[in-house]
Length: 283
Image (cartoon, rainbow, N blue to C red):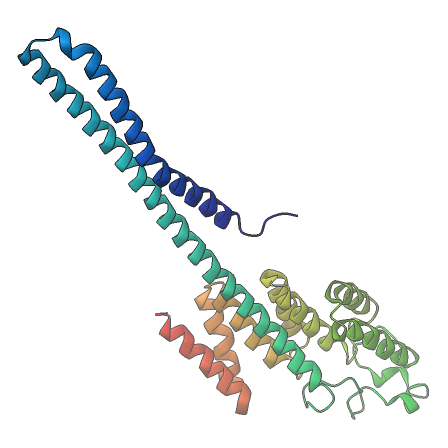
């Protein structure tokens, strides 16, 4: 199994080395003193007093140098431990930030899913207008009931079922499979009442996966292909959020301004909040 914290292992190894060095130093000094004593006892008798003094001074200097070297190495190991500890703390902080952001994204998508049936902007049922008939009447609708669609009215129940199958994958958190399903849906039904929702949820899924560029691509396509959709304002807000994360301040500001200028209520307030974040960042 691959270790998830290689830096912590490094610290453990270095710490063990320091502990070993700390335990070993007294022993090393004792050995050096013993050797020094043996050498002195063997060599000093043949020396004059002046030579003995000079010899002892040189030996003392050598011993002091050795002790200084060992002390330097010990301090260097301690410095490396502090540095590695700092790197671990920085790594843990960044990891926590990523986990918090991922958790917020999951909460956002779970909230939207839980409110899907009651939300005015997210509906699985066809809207009650002349563009798409309820299932009971769909089979008798005329071909012109779905404007700009490449499919006749008999395909509408099939489109609904295909969208619901793709959306069920989002509910069950099979995100990659849901992307494939939504892509197939948009290929088969590029201009139904469900197509904007398909684009939106593809963007949401990519956002949960932290694929910011792919998410932005889907939200951008939604705003250009379905400018009058109830999802368009939400898509522009998402684009603003994505571009803030990418520090693309000009693009983020442009989308927030579009929402603030063209929508009211909660959407307008969210756009103003986004613009405030940009100002606080100094842009």
